Image 1 (cartoon, rainbow, N blue to C red):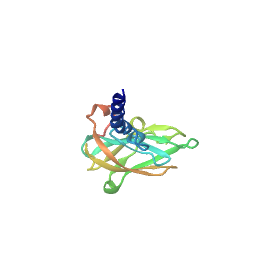
Image 2 (cartoon, helix red, strand yellow):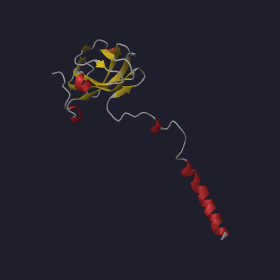
Image 3 (cartoon, rainbow, N blue to C red):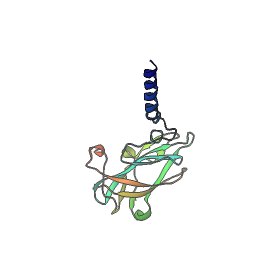
Image 4 (tube, rainbow, N blue to C red):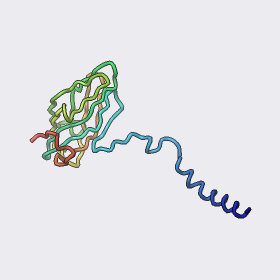
Amino acid sequence: MKARRAVAVAALLLVAPGISACSRGFNEQTDQVYNPAAGVSDRSGSVDVLNALVVSGTDGSGTVIAGLANNDQTHSDKLTGVQGAGAQSGAQVKPGGQTTISPGGYLDLASKGQIEIRDKAVVPGGMVKLRFTFDRGQAVTLDVPVVPASDPTYSGIAVPG
């Protein structure tokens, strides 16, 4: 009986480190914000820029899409511009559509924005540096991926010809 107990205790001592390895503490990958999409996000300002990307139908042109979430619960904000930044500072950006974000609201540029961009860097698989500016909120600059309009996910996005 004592031998069985000793074997059981020894087995438990061998298995314990493996079992306890599952809980390593805080700040694990599952505790981090994860965006399972092609776009990039920035949550540092009073307006969150979510899943920003450029959908391109032909090299050199595309449509900027993103979700804009106003974190201010009492004041509306307005997207005042999207410009190329850094090496893309000369990009031609043509705004269009709705720009006002209601207090605590959300604006989907994919369905209500239609912001066109033209620049040699707008090529599927590439990146474009864009600066989003707001009336009340802080400006946000992001390296935005360019995706092909041929991807079925973006079939509803109008792209420049």
